[in-house]
Length: 540
Image (cartoon, rainbow, N blue to C red):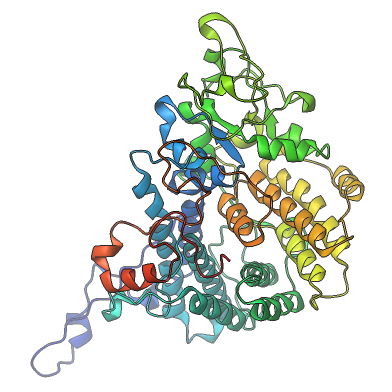
């Protein structure tokens, strides 16, 4: 991974007295770097890195949305009690800290993109890096607004001009601005100009791929509005389709870890921490869904740990898990290992322990993420995929929108096949051939008997696809937007959301004092204040 270089700026002190022929030399700090001598392209990698760091690992998603949307489950006792946030909506010691990290890292990502826009905005030869930076800025702030609700946008990233307490824009205005900014940037990409440098996506600065990525992002943002502003949703979904979205699995956007240089995959780092390695399992909701159609992803993503507590608890163990399809069993959400009424041994269908005696593992017959796929610290961390775009286009077509001649059923088949093939980015152990993927898609076509049936099927597949690729926030946001799959909330004692699946994260604890007026206005637009179960503007 290319390291991100931090530009510190040029400091110039104005003399009180008159001019001098040596003014520039005298008033230039020799320890700083002038914009003319710095390649701002490197801010792109910094923006990408901060974004992916914000949506993965312990910076939020794996500790919240992975369980809220029932991709993962955990018995959450002992050393791994921080997973109570996601499995049972019960606070751990650092819940508020975790909740604020998406805000901080999203703005760090956007700030680095804004530096590119500021430094190169008037340079016609740099139009592609400016456009890519605008795409990244929108991507980052889209993530932030979907986590919290109203956010600073029109006045954000202007601290250098003295705006240290920016106004919070209403989420509707944020969405309109994001779509407008994205539309303008995408129209300016120019293949005859220099490529963006320092690109961490597998695009190597390819202008065509960046443009298609941007239009797929536009499609994702547009579809978020289907219950809040249908006309705007249709307008920009059609614009995205006309512009050209991601064209194949080879254009999936992800960032691979670079553990040797200190940039590991944070999802994999989390899953290989001892307590997490033992207690984090695939949710029963997800495994049941996949097994109902004999989905080939089951044996790719899931395995039973080696029998016995000692082997199942050791992330350094080389003992292979058992990924036999028929044996995979998801852990139901909301159970623990505390011996009381919610102890996992009392769950319906409890399969018993693996091992025996003092080495018995009470959760050893539940499926964990397969180590050969998910435990590599250099594993890919997904941002947006061709499969997601095709599934969203399928929904747009079902709604009767003008997104091209391809049928909803064909878009759906493309999305399902691609969802299976995208796993190949994790390596040979995760590879499903195009032949197998296409056969599975053909055997499980879109139900077109009614619009409701189609929407259900499309959005359930979207949930499974994004969850399996560990993009938990996207799985959760689309669940809120679509209502699919239908999930049963956990109502565990002491939960922070009133026994419902959380609909947002609370603002960082620094906002009420750091930006009191903005924070107060933002909270006033939430349905129940700055709480986990408040709904934001588009979440109808």
